Image (cartoon, rainbow, N blue to C red):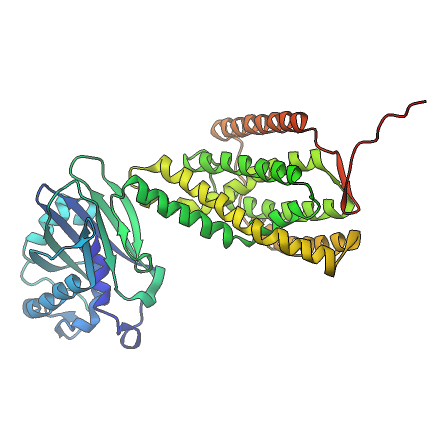
Length: 437
């Protein structure tokens, strides 16, 4: 796997010498044995342009390509580093060969390793830049139970356009697939639970801090709230709701189809518009808590999109990683509240005081949300909606049950906390006391 990335390092100057093909894909395997780690990798030949394989007209001079292959293998070992418990390994052996683009031996590790070990047939014709370089690197290891990782310094300017589809095959457990890019740095192939948790906490913080639509919704929520109890109740309701759908999505319970992601994004923008308009019209706290949890379910689906591609790096610690990601979101949310609340207090006290300030701030947020909503509606209107078959109907019933459960939780919380019914004119308004004659 790692070796794949290395091949690109060999072509750092390819940008000015050759037109790079976007979405380049390399295939690889990392197989752990009792005393060795085997890395088998396949990379497009055009990535090795700086190696200068000899050519005859429009074809590679296969018979005289051995020196270039040695340089390619050396480049792979320099640009790709395999780690065992943090210690960089050095390859014990490296073999490679050229391959026709029609070859399908990399569908399994055994087929790929056997193919690399076999010599290329005499007279094979490979058009320049249209074949593959296949390599097999062998690394001595201390223990098959160690934590293995890979790091590449190959062509960082290519970013996520260069993808390595890697299949990791440990000694005594099931294998798994992952997609690695050069921008990821050091990637654990079999992380410990604590390293996986730390990585997903960090990922959750980054996701919420960079999620401007989620932050604007949070700001809309807190603009009219003044008491700590109100703030804690509403934010906790949002947290519970988005955690519910986030975890459900990670286990494959989210609706499928091209329509659902743009529907979620459009509804998130709608949630900003609605909450901002409610701030202008006057807030009923009980209704706000209910709608916060309903919209929170949708935001949870949005959070899950930042998680889906990263779960491949959870190793065997899926559940731990899920909760760690959610914890990271909550930490990031708290950090943003620590910034938002004092800033909001200053603005509403000295810059835009009173009810007018609430209206102006909310109108600005509503305008931003409306702009996003119209853009996302345009994207949603171009996709096909699903038919209501049995599978989709079952999923719909499941999430309706979840909504009912959320509504029940809201009623229980409201009854327990006895929240004031409304907030107007920038201050809390308690229920009117019964008149006594």
